[in-house]
Image 1 (spheres, rainbow, N blue to C red):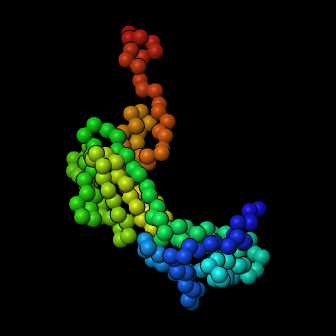
Image 2: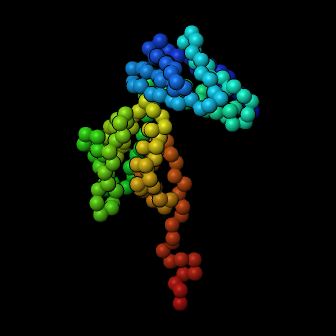
Image 3: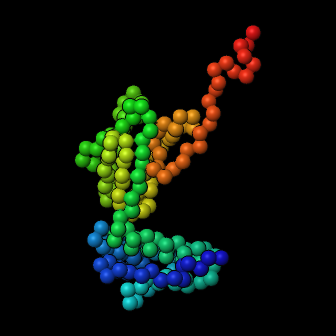
Length: 185
């Protein structure tokens, strides 16, 4: 069993971590985030280190300790340097445009698809086909990127659609022109 929950999270000098009423608040140059700590988990802040301590040895409490520790580490990383997700659009005539906080996608449907950026997420579009999303909250960023990808999931035959930049689409072989039997008569 992994014991990563016992390791303290080291807090940089430009980040403040506060604890009040079972909620951990992290403030840094890139934003403010908060996390409600589950019961039977205690968080201590000493000497620019955050420790997560479990109060019982129940299985769920052990799992929660590791999860809370990992989420606090992601919060500290997010407020110092924002998380980035890059999406690419593949397909003839497929493109994206950004107007304020609204992304407009032309993906071969009869209408353009519009999505509003959630608060805290910033976007940049390069060459009309590369969408770069940035956010301090890793969970919010991942969920929004997944909703954008879900609009037009890449098909396995031509790989047209929205995909993550580091994603590899397994391609399937298409049908052959004459078929295996050669004519059908």
